[in-house]
Length: 168
Image (tube, rainbow, N blue to C red; front, side, top):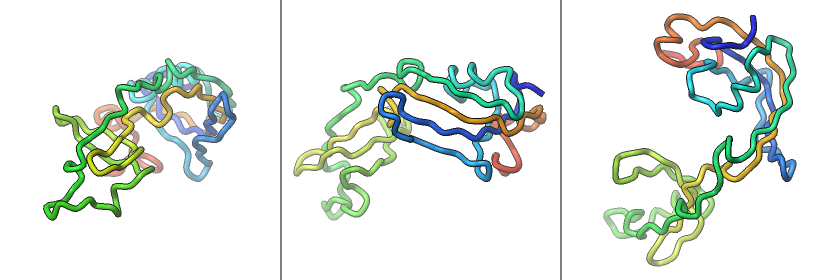
């Protein structure tokens, strides 16, 4: 079976920053990346480069930043008043709010997003809400481990069930 719309795909890959060669992420045959192909949940260029491949096929492709996680946006780096991070006692939760930590936040419209703490001072916490891979050209290498047709339940739920997938 070849990879196409509504197939469940299992891949093992290494992701590197194309410019620096730094490894960003790596899966393994024991813990592969398993996904439902063609549902819009992945980078379009990632799927485009896997479309039509079959079990055992190797892949090696690049996705530029604009087609990956976008370019870094300086307006996504914001200063949030320190009060937003203080408990009822008026003290900062220093165990969880510290430079380098990524925190879940909610915007004014109730949308969940994640921001990395860049700096903390007496008045503000400076946070970066850019995707961690924003501005990076990506290099994927790997192998297709398995391809199968998605079940009706998987299609109805929009995600993979079973081993390495979602369990209800």
